[in-house]
Image (cartoon, rainbow, N blue to C red; front, side):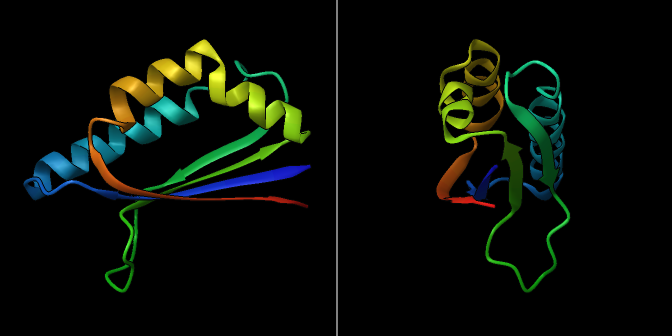
Length: 99
């Protein structure tokens, strides 16, 4: 099993817009459940505490490293990433590890 965790810091925007963007990212990414071969779990946390220096987190589990690689290029994932994620973040940090 492989864990794929991403933390994003969003671009500057009004608070109400940021909440909408975070909700859209959560809905879009969690909507990939059942569509990606080898994707076991997918969760997006949008309720960061004030002590955080990231705005949201993607936490996914894959059956294998090959499944994670397939996810990165899967058309459903690419569509969500291009429309709901990439236009709105200014910084991304990723950690992949075996569990």
